[in-house]
Length: 232
Image (tube, rainbow, N blue to C red):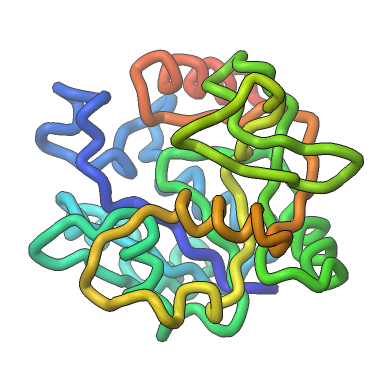
């Protein structure tokens, strides 16, 4: 299966004071560091290669994860450096480790989804990228995707319109060519790349029907803990 890039370099200010001394990836969810839950899940999905894009306090994550062998994975590291690179800039720096196409999701997300089915959909879509989407109607966050008849008409995180009822679920597949011409060592947002792809007709959509979980906020952390405590 495709390599997975996990974007986990942010400051996680919404989780202060928890993340003043540890990175968000090491926040415990029902007694287990979140990154451990993510990597165990990826192994169960059949993933073999993971690239961790790290920044703030990222060395702590490397101490826990190592080379990934304890999870049955091969884990490679890509570092922001002295300044935060943003989600797009971090991926641009990680391209040498990612191959021609790759999965990407966020270091604060837990996504009950079939990765193999998403990869199969991407391979048959003929487009440069794919975004998983969930009908959200502003329930968990502001809806930002106009999705009609199985097609993404527009993704717009910055200026969503009322007609948008879906949201970026958090798992995508990108072709390296999408980022290849972007400048190295310059921060930019992956959301802008997705937006441009959508209005160009180069962003496929894959609809899912089970909600996502995240630890990027105190409320999200509480809901994620409850999810695991129920043994789901």
